[in-house]
Length: 397
Ligand code: PLP
Image (cartoon, rainbow, N blue to C red; front, side):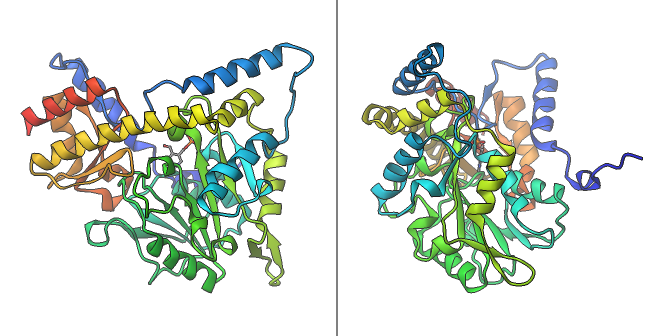
């Protein structure tokens, strides 16, 4: 008989966005809906930078001729992109990451989900609560049961401390989705010291790194001393450069990073991740990687920065509007997400904004129990829509 992986029955149904869609559809059917403004799902709205599309058009021309045609590329990514990442994302910030420690992929979601394959099923995992659900669900699918939730609330500024954490692996994401919180270097250093002291691992998701504008906030876990022996970092071009539909990101695994076999022998995680990717992944497309390379050109950097500045201004407008209405609003400074204390059940507040303001947000309870009492408002929308949403919300509240 064909047996299924019963761990799939242990994953919570993808309740959140399905439930939001069904409530929005219900509201639209009621006949009371004006034009709906969506500040819910974290997808970008601004188009790709001209420098990126020009590079992609040129890459299409390469593929159209015999001279520069590219078939299968290196599974780990083209050297031209890995070199630029090492130079601009890391060396320019004083961080020593070698191009061969960078593995290009088709986005951070896959890498965040796949990385757990490298570890035994009895490792203890810790995640924040609220959390980006991929970290939890992929570990549950793999059959892991020991998953600790690290509460992130107002009392700790939405940044957990390692003091009572006895996990083998912790997933940290800063700037955070959904809370918009950032971690200081001292806070990340505490986690690095904790990890090194116990042969543990930090999986650091820096998907929103490009939104950091506060100088003292680290962009990479590798800005902390000792992180090379205890951390893996994921990056994504989705929010950095509007690549949600193009698909590209990368994972950094330092050469000296190890995990241990049952007999105590150390095993290189870079070698394992390279083996995993070269076996199960055939590389991001040449056209995509040429587009990603163009993000690092002077024009590409300027254009992508101006788009992020635009979203950050949206975030500021939302945060300040909510604050002026008497709501405590967090995040939205070095992050595209504003996390609002709604002083009551998050689904009720969501319904009120949907039904009375025709604005879609995301109820915090959908990201975990500690998200109850908050909603996430995303800054990914046009200025016109953000201003209109603020106006409608102000009238309702
Ligand atoms: N990590 C976090 C925290 C995210 O919020 C997202 C997307 O929303 C991702 C990773 C996925 O990024 P990508 O589009 O590169 O798969």
